[in-house]
Image 1 (cartoon, helix red, strand yellow):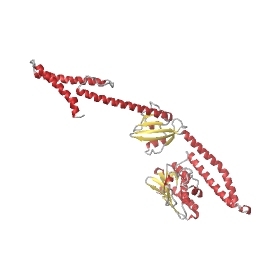
Image 2 (cartoon, helix red, strand yellow):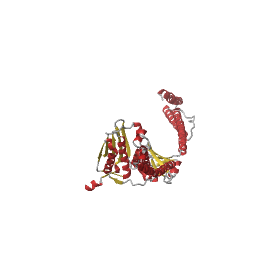
Image 3 (cartoon, rainbow, N blue to C red):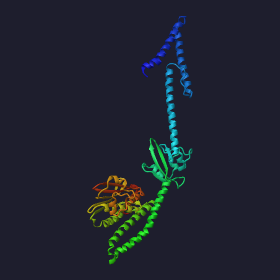
Image 4 (tube, helix red, strand yellow):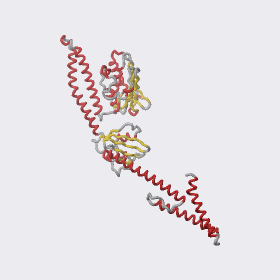
Length: 444
């Protein structure tokens, strides 16, 4: 408000009123009454007038209505009342809009099939929708204000919730029924947390059907393939003149049947990795000795390619895990390096500790991989170069097996590659998985 508008609407009104009182006092003083006493009475009337105006304002404010200010309010009190009235109308309209938005949000949150839980900064439940009740068995009244960890005591969820790495979703059984398979994700916003729960029971069932199908087909193919390979080996070793003309045919058939055998074996390996959930992953694994075995196999596989394969492994570093799965992952990576590194190339195998991680890396001087393929190269049957993969006898499942085996050990596969220079594949284990060599501990 400018001084001019303030003077016109407030000060001018007050000056006129005071001038009217003084004039009245002067007029009455002509009757012989003391002017000072008359002025004091006028001042009391002025104060009383403002007290009366304040009373009207308070009575109007005490009424929980949006009616306009009373007409008898004058002067500065009228101005204040108008301002309050406008603010009330603004906030009421804003409240109505917020209530409408909240109502729409509530309807939408109840309509979507995913469960939603809002937590405060301490992890206490503030709000949840109906799907959360169905998926987790929450109670509308009793569970509000309760710590989420007191209701969901699954060890996997407790570890996930207390960790700071929530980029990945957590899969767990519902506390209501283990037939309900849930996917949970915790998202932070401001000082609160949002828990999103999805039911993927149908998807899990489809995955299980697919895994069972692959496993069953692989098992069924194993026996006839073994018979075919056996007969082909017999025919290939036959030195009769009648079969001499067919030896090239037998050789090609033997190659393709061997490739199919490797494919079936890889499919069975993946199926076992998918299904073996109770396998022991806390065995003491002698990684340096294992890598020495992998090195010997790599030299045999390299054959006449004249490759230089070196191993540098810290003898004091072991890990807790499953020997068969870790050996399969390491040997897959080294075999790939041998297959895709040209004659005279170099392959460097290392096992070392880096900060809070344990790393097994395989570095080669092969052709390298384009960056656009790296994100997908661990997918099942994904091939960077289909023709080249077939020529080397690859099945397209090796890196998928590696990735899956590492995930079961809380580890990750990292890939760095440059076209024309080579690639580095690294198996990165958390430091918690590492142990010191029992032999070194015993001798110390």
